[in-house]
Length: 238
Image (cartoon, rainbow, N blue to C red; front, side, top):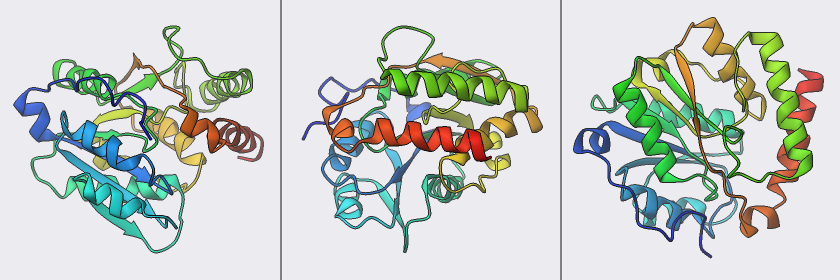
């Protein structure tokens, strides 16, 4: 099974970026694709940590076979908890300068992540957040598009942070920003929590156009629909 974005040649990072960047990948039951995703991303970013969040398949073994560092939760705690565990793990490396959160299912592209880290290196920014809505490449379904637009409006009202895509899992942040952000919401609410902290901590942020690829694999798992339902529930009951 081929993951999105893995058939093309991997972009080349400078030695400084390659050494100083850690990809944090929350992982839950993605055994069919995670090895290929890890192998591809490691051609650009050698440092990858996958946090296996209580998977019931062979996800951890496949990630390890692809060359990732693997940390395992004994039970499923949710994506927010997996991200917090992965960030803490990456920060143990004194050479870590940039942290990238990256999905396990092949929907994110390494070249987008590299551009985001390059911006952190070149610009006075603390965090760069990917946006599906700054250009027309990403084609989410109508329900997902409507929910994500509602999430953007909600976040602007509650946090004052102006984003076009408040629930994009592709983010790049400096070591300092990663050390200050505290993710306490384990499940879908963690995305809103991160945005809230951009405002509370007065972090310097920018958005980067990214292409999120909705694959046959992710659609077969129903991720797009269920994520939309979860985001909508969060907005209503937060």
